[in-house]
Image (cartoon, rainbow, N blue to C red; front, top):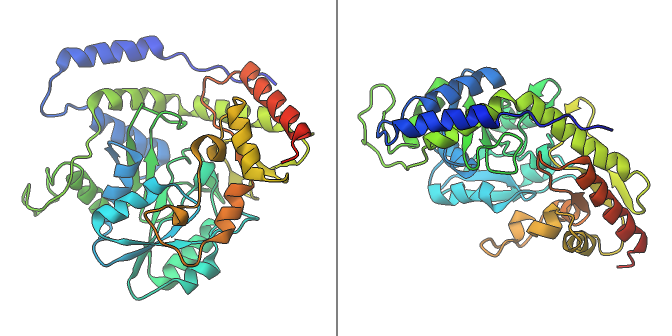
Length: 368
C-alpha cells in the first residue's frame, strides 16, 4: 500500500517561528498558548483546553485541579509508565496499582474493587499504545464508587471508542506532545475538560497560581511552573492543524506493518475492540514464542525499536521505587508477550518493509 504523504508545513512554520522570535523576549508569554488552547478545544470538541509543559505536567495539574493531595489513594493500572505515577508522589498521594485483562488490555475491575479503600479518590485509566478500554465499564465503575476519572491519554490523541474520544470520558483528559507522539511539539502537553472550575484551577496551578481563579488572589497558594513555551505552542498549533493527516499516516503505517506480518510465525496482530477507532499509535502483535520478552529485546538489537525491547517497559508496580507483595500478573503477561513497534511520521514504506523483513526472519529462526 502507498502511505499518505507527510503534509509539508515546514516553510509556514518557519515563518511563524521567525515572526515569534522577533517578538521575544516577552515576559507576558504572548498570545500563542491561548490561541493553541482555543484550537485544541475546537479540535477535540470540548469546552476547555489548558496547555502545559509536558504530559507529566498535564497529569500533575489535572490531579491537583481535581483535589488530589496528601493521604489520598488513586487507582492506576500497573500497565503504564512511571511518568503516570510521578505526579501522584509530587502531590503526596498514593498510587494503588490495579491489574489489566491480558485478553483485552482493559482494566481488571474485579481487581480494582478489591483494592478500594475509604481513601480512594480517583482512577487514572491509561490508554497505552493509543488503545482504549470500555468507556461504559469505566464510567459505571467510577460512578458506583464516587471516583473522579482522570485519563492518561498521552498516546491516544485521535482514538475513540463507542463514539467517545480519548481524553473526554471523565473529569479531565491528559495528553503529551513529546516527540514521537502523533500530535507533537518537541515537548509539551495539554489537558481537556468540560468543567470550568477544573480549567481555572489548572491554568492557575501551571503558573504559580497566577492568574488566580475568580475570587482568589494571585500567588495565594503554592503551585508550580508548568507553562508551555511560546515556540513550542507555535509548533503544536501547526501540527494540530494537520492532525487529521498525521492520524491517517500513522494508521496507514501501522496497517502496512501489521499486514506484512500476517505470516510471521509466533506473532498475531492485536486487533482493536468492536467500536474502537484506534489511532494506530504502535503496531501491536502478541508474541507466542519462547522467551517472548527476550525476543523483543533481540529485535531492538536488530534495529526494530519497540516498547519492551528498546525502552525496557515493565509493569509499574515492579519498579524499584514501589513495593508490591501482590504483583499485577495480567499486566506483566501483556508486556512480556506484546511487540509494540515504535513509529514516527518519517517512517517510510521502505523502513516499514525493512522492519517486517527483520521480524519475519528473526521469528522464523528464534529458538529462545
